[in-house]
Amino acid sequence: GNASQIPAGSLLYQTADGAGLAKLFVIENPNTAPAFRPSGSACYADALAAVTYNGGFAFDAAGNIIYGMAEMRPVGFSLFGRIMALVNTNGDQMIGPGEANTLVSDPHLDDGLTDLAVSNEGRVFYSSNSATVWAFALPADLLTGTATPAPFVRTDAAYISAVRFDFPGRTFAAGSTGTTARLY
Image 1 (spheres, rainbow, N blue to C red):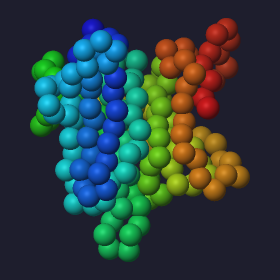
Image 2 (cartoon, rainbow, N blue to C red; image 1 turned 90 degrees about the vertical axis):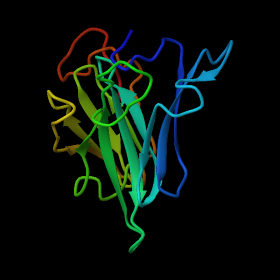
Image 3 (cartoon, one colour; image 1 turned 60 degrees about the vertical axis):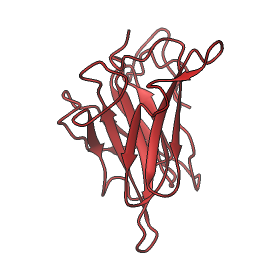
């Protein structure tokens, strides 16, 4: 019932083969009759010329997928990354041509990308191969817009591997009262 047309209770996972192919898989009925959706294939695949690593994925409040990946350039072996919006405009089982848009890339992801989380208000928080957690607001049009990240918090860690909300459906707005989400 969400914008991505992924049945409730499905399992999603992300792969990156280190040889230029990143994929997002959906498995329906993982506990009873597991099956890939679509049959025998990935929901989304992104073929790149670079070496790829997982960068995380999350859903916005409408159910669109925000998808990250890290890439290593063959020349100089430097990392960079991309954060994309995957919008299932035709309601089928795959994210195809015209249904993916790069929201953020170089120079804002020169340290790569390790994970991301999306708040109920449409703010993306991501970690990279650095001590900083970055944030940006999703654009109004996910398939044409872009975003400019800014530091959200700087830590003394050498590397931050994951960012997650305990309850993504709760507010994370500054100054909110009542039951709110926490970012870990």
